[in-house]
Amino acid sequence: MLRHIHRWVVLVGLAPAMALAGGDMAAYEAATAELQKGTPAAAAAAAVALFELSEHSALPEVRRQAEYQLGRALELKGYPVAASIYYSGVIKEGPSHPYQLQAVEGLVRVQDKLRDPFLIPSALDRAFDTSWSKLQREPRARVNYLVALTSQRANKLEEARQFAEEVPEDSPVFAKAQYLLGVLLADPRYPGGPQDGAALASFQRVIDLKDKGQQDLAQVRELSLLGKGRLLYAQKRYEEAVKTYEAVPRFSRYWDQALFELGFARFRAEDYGGALGALQALHAPQFEAAFQPESWLLKATIYYFSCLYDEAAASMKAFHTLYQPMRAQMEVLLAQEHELQGYFTLINDPKDQRLPRPVKLWVRNNERIIGLFKLLEEIDREKAAARTEKGWAQSRMADALGAYLDQNREVVVQTAGQLVKNRLTEATDNIKKYTNDGSLIRFETTLRQKDLYEQGVDQGKVLNAQQIHRPGMPGEDWNYWAFQGEFWIDEIGYYQYTLKQGCPAPKAEAEAPEPPRPPEAPVQSSKGAP
Image (cartoon, rainbow, N blue to C red; front, side, top):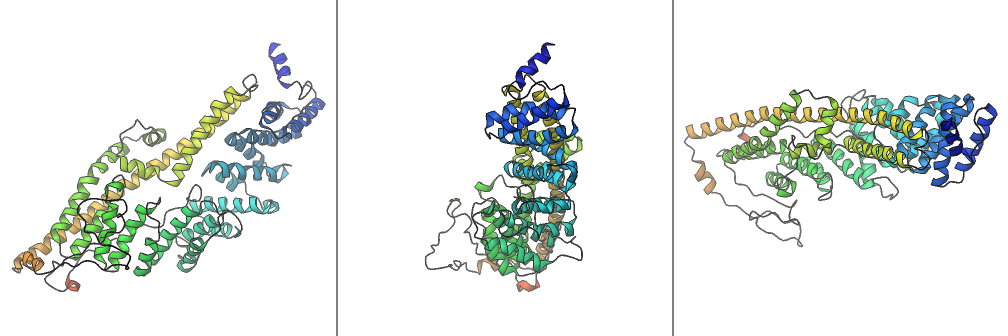
């Protein structure tokens, strides 16, 4: 009896007793009128009444409409994840729900606020309906982008293309849609084969964009430069690839990856000194936490092609010293067959030191994982805040919201754990592959040294007979400084090696293992990948 009186006290001013159907409608109208005030305080009060109606109203129509209005109230009050739960419930009903389109728009708004890479895009993809063509222009554009993103992750590449192409130029997510379009068109799995020309055009559109209203434009432009560089490299247009990689801003988020791939492009353009200069920057102390095992194989390969076999061996030794212990640590963790929660803890718990720091940072730098971790932080914040919200703790609302948020949290943790496991498996497999590639380099190096010995070639004399000259200067306003073992912040990225040739025969006669090409374009995720 006391519980009923207490509930009546909470709802006083919003609705009379809720026992009769007519009372439900009156309570609903009072709650929506309160919500129309547009203040967080009014939203908090309206939310309690709307929650009770959505759970217990005797009128189905009141329950359905209250569910949408509760999503609005929670969004206004600053609970975007909780709001998305109710909006998602509405769109699941399809066009028959009177507020379906408004709920879609609500989901688009809270996704933009949360930058949720998983829950909301997946909900929109599952519920997508042709009736959504009636949405306003900007919400429709964002829906098309998010559905394209979800389709691309599911390898439905043609479907992803169709949705991405529907995003108009005046949309803030146009740059992201164009980058995504470039990624999926360049994918070897694209139906009929990759469309390199169209992919290059999409990347170039992003690079040329000047619209400051584009979401995360600087980051998306950097990704597009990487995408363009990879396509040019694959087409053996190495000089163009070099210029493209060089356009990635120094010390930007993706600069370490650009340096690595720049080394490949310069090597293929037979600029061995420039390639080693890019790797010198990548191996500077400022990048000591970078996870780039293949860079040491590239360094060894460059030295091999120059018949500098001692330096090639030293590069392979550095690879083994740095990365074999990491491989051993990861193999132990993967062999333990953690639950997905355990993999999530490996990355999320700052006190957990079982993973090497470069691997941990490499895993955490994945866009989807970043987005999921931020989403988890918001879920935890909303759950704690709901328990202290005035008027909510006295109703069932705080407990119910907590339960709903916990369900979403578990899904996100499982998803993040699976992504972490996948990344660790990828890292371990990469080190294994590069170890095998390195064995071939070591074998070829030993064989060539043996050949020189049997031919009576004194490589020391060959090298001593050569002079080293300063590299060419890019312009009159450039200065030359000899590297003396110190890494100055304003010099990183501008290194250029000058190499002697240890080959007694013309360079064309030297044989060497085929160097691997840079990795494929990264999958777009989260805010776009951003």
